[in-house]
Image (cartoon, rainbow, N blue to C red; front, side, top):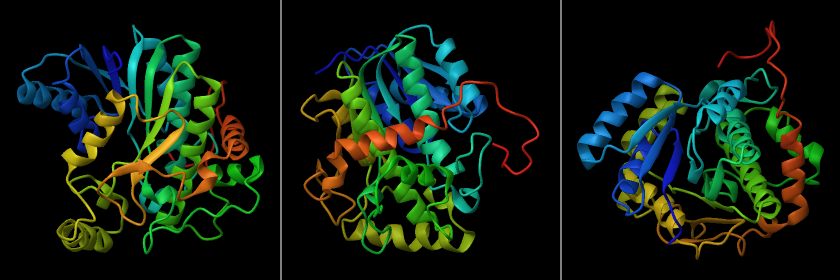
Length: 320
């Protein structure tokens, strides 16, 4: 088992991130768990609940908003020590406004799932504050879910085409789940490229699977959210197509602590399922391990990782 002294989890005040923090508190050798959250009040409430549940006073807070590169980079500067395990959990389908552009020229969905995390990882590496294992939280949607999200089917997989995933122009008409699958696919490919660029760090993509008890319904219209939470998810759990938050978070913890899960690989449910055994997805979708495609995704993402202060007066962009 790799050394896991300090662990940072983004999106840790609720759902899968919070549950992962709870589970990791019981792991021998874990001495600090940093909750990376946008909202300090919610984070401190989660911290108090975690301390009460685990009896461990090892939780700390750092403000991280993956839709705001300036906030992410401030967090990198603020962190006083090296991170041994990093779980890039913050994300979501983006909801009805997920297609709106941030000040960095990417969709809100891409910002929260990919761009902010890339800035965090690359900033920590540059500051020599990262070692060990990085878990990028993926989704079965990145390899396609029958009836849920189509398999990503890029025409050329060029740098320019990957850039259209980031800025949302890949879709002539925005579709939440189709876009979510493309975004998670690009994040998965970026992680694969990073694994080869930084062999001293283990990069593994892990899907939590279809998980009840998260805020996934918040990204949907009220009617669809009600149907998903009250009808679809209970039915999926009944037939073994979904599981609870603890099972989803256990996937993170299992992979984080077990070097048998190889760097540069994407682990998720056996297709076409969204629950059950956790397996390497490359035998089912060969594009996932195409080094050229991975590097194109990485290069496209670099176009949006600005280093200068954010411009003002960008009225055509959503506020985040």
